Length: 115
Image (cartoon, rainbow, N blue to C red; front, side):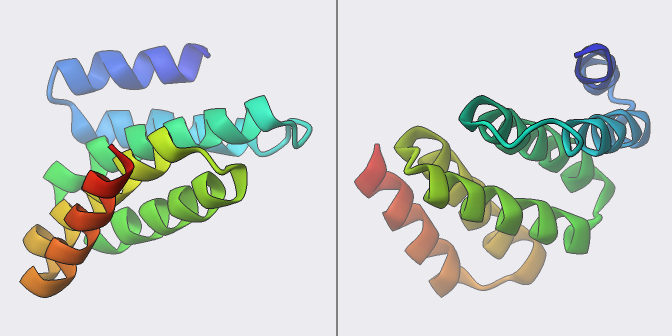
């Protein structure tokens, strides 16, 4: 919890590298928790926070990995809200990082269907 707050504070100050470090550490700590539904939901949210820190840094490989894990977890949880958010982020990633407009449209369409 402390690391998540520290990461959020760093993002609000545009200290993206520091935020990514905090969210990365929070994910490491979170991985040691029992695999309850709440813990998995928390992990998805942390992965989204990590995305928010990594994207401005241009760390697209890490963004892709975080979003892929978040998508898999949200799908397994059958969490439409988190899955829709993940698809919106994947759409933005496909457009910004990869330049794949077709794929970006597909993800955006998936997000709209879940909205």
